[in-house]
Length: 372
Length: 128
Image 1 (spheres, rainbow over the protein chains, first blue to last red):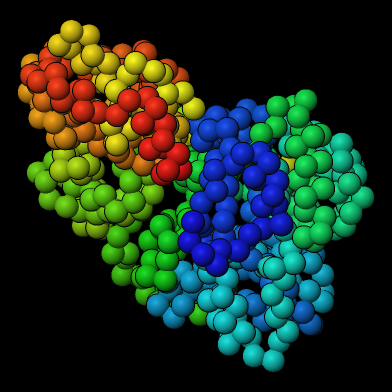
Image 2: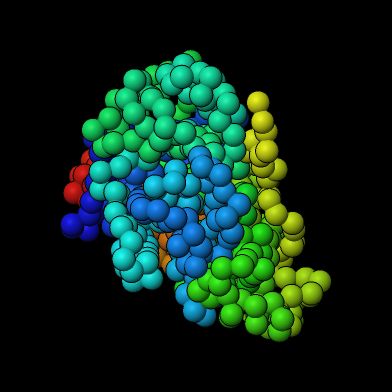
């Protein structure tokens, strides 16, 4: 293990669960507990508990913070009501994605932002620079983040948090409530495609919350889930991962994230000009979803070719989907070849056929638009 | 972690069982556990000739791809078809149903040069 890795407040809990720890985004994180495929399947069938405390959280404080943040992000924050959250892209002038983030409209005096661990410093610097005179506070080191995902998540959480609050919380809304009597920000969000929650809680309550949730979920078959299964779950949904499908050199339009880009937004935002131009002239490459007709995994960096052997693109993420029972992958194909009927992935000098498909690979069960 | 006695072991975490002049080859419990869920196994065809230390196949899990190296020289006389169709057998039973290939050994002394169960145990602990 490299030196100087940070640990989340749940580090000792992971060791007790005999997790395999790996370096990730500067942290020592659990990659798997019982087994990657078992953890993936169990999250779709029952429930999974994830430590994602490595992720970063910022608080933007003051009046009209949402309006000020509008000029930094691609989605339209003016649509949010207090308590609501929104998936968003932070872009540079070229329209490249600095990071993808979730923006929470807490109240008139605070906007809360959840960012990727590996981009935390870059994001903070960028936002500070472009929000001069505003108060931006990095809460990452004192905030733990636990995700409870799966069809039984609501049932499990209702036992240990106020039941009415849990049941009435809508998809992409958040509320200040309690977990085991301790204050937390409870959000009906996640990155698995299942119904579920994310719990932002002070570090000092993290261990009791984690262990309490595993205990409460035990009769329901809950399992702790590591980063390996988390990646498979997000990939089965076709959700992008920064550094793979999106990056400072890839625009959200190239990555099929048009639904997060509101070019008609009245407040101009950084990257808008470049994205408008891209929309007018067309993208240079497009993201495609593939199912490999073989057992070999198409991995990040593997080349995509047409049957003649001409290379037309590159895989950005690949895994074995236990639900499709085949390797699945995402990858960019040059626009002029995007309508080719047949694609192959080059695996160890061999052309392996792939089928293109529509996303998600596995139907989403997140409770979209459900009002109870 | 299981390390059955009576088998021979390689530094690449393969095991060899010698019956007369036929060596059965598979990967160890340590190897399958390190790889995690195995999703693909690639093996050569019967009749192919392999040389000691040459790659003869591939084992792939979600996390990693690993080459298989022949522990001995000889002709492949049998390939375990079921693990090609159901690679998870290797995770479930690496020392028995999860075997990979059988090699007709040219020189039995090549097998005897490999590690014993005790020596392999020490080797794994040192690396561990």
